[in-house]
Length: 132
Image (cartoon, rainbow, N blue to C red; front, side, top):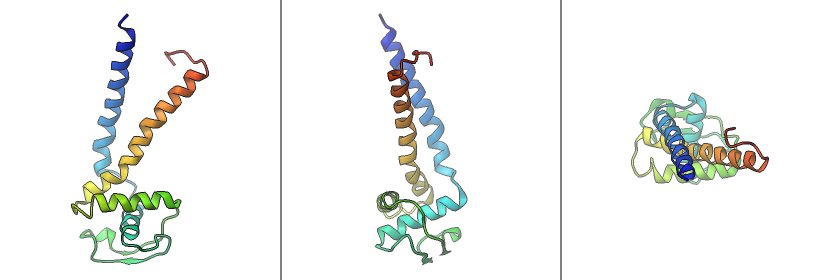
């Protein structure tokens, strides 16, 4: 009779554990090249520049690895627009590189959790056992 409540508690615990692992790592970690390109793309889009063309960025960020000439992003426009919004809502308000780095990763973390639930629902529709 308390089985559904137990499942919900277990599922909530797993989601919180996943967030507990992903969030602290997201603040500090990221691929060296990709993070630079994503951060610069966010700045370029929020400034009205074309992120698909290389630009020389200097004096915007106080971090030397974000200054200079960069190759352009190769991702679809929706990701670039999202990066521009993230820049406006994070680094533009509070110039903190760790906050900006974390803010870029929030959509990825949310998608990880959504993908897990999608996969769970697909397995349920396919008739997989609850244990699987």
